[in-house]
Image (cartoon, rainbow, N blue to C red; front, top):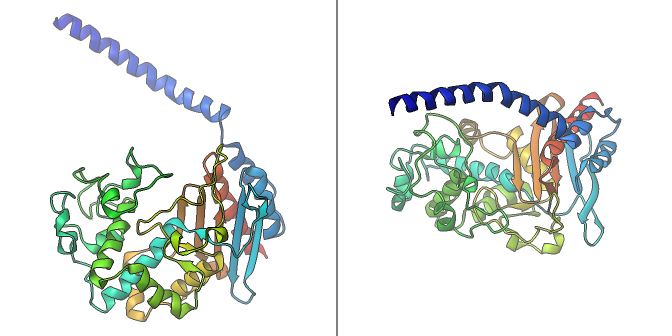
Length: 356
């Protein structure tokens, strides 16, 4: 028996050595035979002279529609678009259309949290157990995970959207449905030991804000952030708007329009125009949105730009200090090479602005 075991181990060692040689070769072959051609072609193409040319060219690489908003100091806000707002009905892209901004929503929640911490309605060292004691025993280390860790994606709590049973086309409609996917699951790492992006963090932050406020945090965002900035085309949930005003969303190789799929979870549910997002992001970065103490708190808990992804929707919102410009990009296509193409197109737009 021991001889057979040694023989088996010997064969396994030989197999592992062969795999170590073969797998890199297989990887190279796959990269050559199945490369992300749309992304590569978008990257190597000559840089056009104008942003509009780049936006038009983006359609040649598998995108259904694209909206870009540029707010550069010393220049009037500029809008660029190409493709479809609604492909089935041949409605062209409209720069003033509403868009599911996905995880850009986290910027608004972090700003709201900074304001509430500043007025001492919350403490960054408050624990998850302090505000949601029912999660003790369901989320590991609930007594040690702080609001600061949740905001900074340092809690270690698994990302519920990574769970095998999560369906982007039929997302849970309430807190319990989302948390049910990760309850009783081990953490990815001990609290504050590492950083890993997790939608569960902002799901919990939004829920904590609701409890502290005694009403929905989206109402607080509207009153304390949107109204002072004069933003009238930003909404907390899809059900607050007319679907006819919303850009359709498509996934590669599917004819289905995912516009009516509603995401209720905090941190991914908001809807806005590109211009409204641009005004918000400018104010967040130049200090006009938050008071000095609030800005200091915000700087310690979150970033000043973001990307977003929902089924059929991609968004990028960033401030570029070297050219003093806010650049917002919405793309209503996901899947295939579209994520890479979106990133390449955004980078090329910034390069065009930099050389103008």
